[in-house]
Image 1 (cartoon, helix red, strand yellow):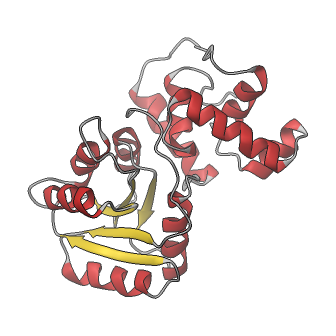
Image 2 (image 1 turned 90 degrees about the horizontal axis):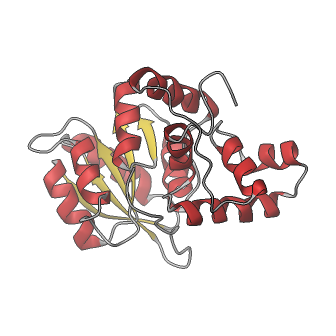
Length: 233
């Protein structure tokens, strides 16, 4: 996990997006799609991971679309550098892009601090929506993908004794446990018989108290600390 929460994008200004991919045609296609969307500005392009880190820091990008396989420094290592303790102080979010639907990339990307994982064959609408979702601090992982994260995590680590965070209230702990299953605010509200606005407040407090970047990393945190287990709840 990385260090501490990074706040959501300020909706009063355009979203700054950086494209990092070693294929110029791919970057050009993404630029056309994203530039056509309201409230999104493409602030630069990088052809390798080292350049991506430099440009993202300099441009104060809100979201980086990061390819995995790039020369010099790959996308996973670039994500670690950008989002680690010595990386950019701007609240940058990273979406890992790849043509390979592989669980190892997915899990490594989340461990590196990425907020989501998107295949390059996603539709233009899904690409635009994903950028906006991540920028506002929401989860990009569907429940199906969350289950894959869980399976990958459980296969690569030894069982962990449950460790309940002492800073969370009983209700916040319930919310975290449901977040770890990939549940949406609406689903959490239904399960706990709460209003969605109340749930949103609880989610924000959980992330803030635990120093988590976003909902996606609440999933990783919950399994790292044995709060929920594969096949359990």
